[in-house]
Amino acid sequence: MQDFYNQIAGRPGDEIGSAQQGASTAAQWLDFPGCVFVRGEFRADPSGPAIVAPGLFISVAFGDGASRGILTRTPGSERQMTAIAVREAVVARRSARCDERPAIGLALPQTSIDRLGLGDEFRALFKNDEAGAAVVSLSASPRVQAVAAEMFSPPVAGNAAQLLLSAHAAELVVHALFSESGRIEVDPAADLQRMRLQSVKEQMDADLAYPWSVDELARNAGLSRRSFNQKFQMAYGESAIDYLRARRLDAARDLLIHQRLSVTEAAFRVGYAHPANFATAFRRHFGYSPSRCQ
Image (cartoon, rainbow, N blue to C red; front, side, top):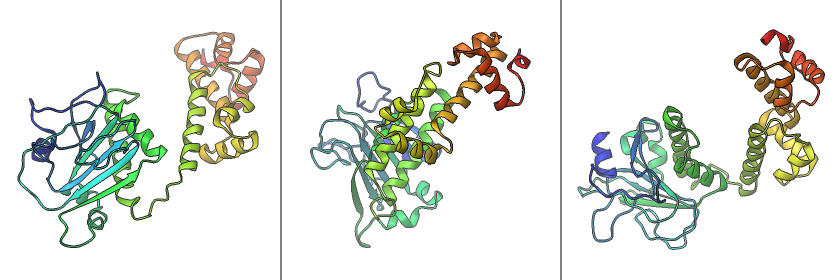
């Protein structure tokens, strides 16, 4: 795949722009799903080289701004997902540049697409047998925007970041290939709701000691108390309160074992005002008293 990488992303010294000042400008190869990833979007200089290698090129713009590029052909394409499928090899120089706006680009060679077992879906993008290229332009759903934003600025580093990029890249490939044909039903309201529930869960994780109430969590999710309870249970397999209790007790056990805190200190640290109530909840959850962890 290195030849494909060199043709698309460029060799050292080529210009690979960044969509955000200070962001990493290095394009990188992701072994899975077998693609080049760049912060910005793949586009051709109007007076220079163009991307023409056989494969699938995906661009997701998730911020404000407008541009004309090889993968974003209309102005005003904020929050857009665009893909161009190329099946006829053309010898040309390469370019990977981007505009000053948040966006990410993915480029998959034909061999990667076939290895993923998606060759038929790739070929289905072409309206007729004579077309050498096909363009798919979609409005990026809140889910796709969130995935692209996390790829642009991963919340983790090292091997974890690489794993996250690979997982998100695979998800975007599926959306690019299947959304146009209607095989993925995109419901913006449901997508936004999932994002809000995830945000509420992350709020609890970030501050376990805070005295969260169901009413406050429901307000943060933009839902009624009843609807919030039902949707959180459906999304995560347990109620928000049960989830919070389990997270608090897991965190308290870690504090007892690894930081050698007292039972009282651990209880206060995870939001229990009364150590006796904490000890009872701990015993029910783990089957033994918290003092055994010391």
